[in-house]
Amino acid sequence: MYPEIEPDESGMLDVGDKHRVYWEVCGNPRGKPAVVVHGGPGSGCSAGMRRFFDPSAYRIVLFDQRMCGRSTPHASEPGADLSANTTDHLLADMERLREHLGIDRWLVFGGSWGSVLGLLYAERHPDRISEMVLCGLATGRQAETDLLTRGLGEVFPEAWARFRAGVPEEDRDGDLADAYHRLLMHPDPVVHAKAARDWCAWEDAIVPTSPSPSPRFQDPTFALGFARIVTHFWRHGSWLEEGVVLAEAGQLAGIPGALVQGNLDLGNLIGTPWQLAAAWPGSELMLVDAGHHATGALGAAIVGATDRFRG
Image (cartoon, rainbow, N blue to C red):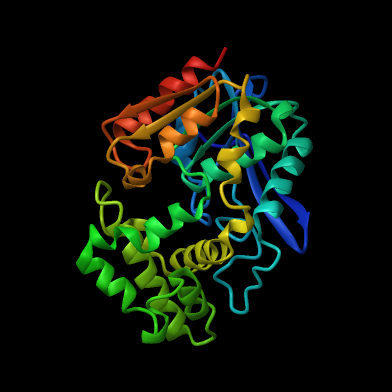
């Protein structure tokens, strides 16, 4: 990965609905534009994401999606209203940011939830995409959410038992994201803080190739905001028609795509990387010895892909 760099410019973009989205630009002001679409949903962007790109070749754009990171309002705030935070809102924000920065076409890099949002953006705006680099592959299907909230319980039974026990007994056989969301939005800080800890402990457990506990989950503000946003999206099926991302991936034919995936990523268990590669003519699936997070060998492979596309 490239050395750490600082933003050359940054700002807060008014996207309506009383929301302001944080953005930053670094690298070469005259370089090839690239936008980073972070995961979660609700993780926010980090300084390390700048390091996937050659700063002499790329104009690197990062932004925090609604209600997370440095965007305002934040999902952790008392009485937070998440109603204007949907997939369509986030896609519209990306277009508004592109126009604000005067960019015609850009490379889209996304990981995990960022790969879902990036794919949707590309399917709706193929003329705005030069290339795509995706990792931690997901397509927003219910089967993927079911795997993460219930299916992996057979792989991590002790952690699963604790996770399931975190909601009222009458909710344990239903939609766990919905049940947790109700607890996370409870006005009592004791209730919503415990729900955030329980949710994030399960998120840690299902990524055994990464350090645990995750440092970011030790921040109560981050943990609460993150858990509120991810459960908000998952309980609504991310406002997506089932299977639509895969069904419309053929529209990406002609857009170069590097699909960089860790072969130890447990999301592979239902075949998403191979299904996406098969549905997207011209994409290339590259498997590396890594897990879900874009560090180590996976990070190096991502850099290899962005280097290949830098022109």
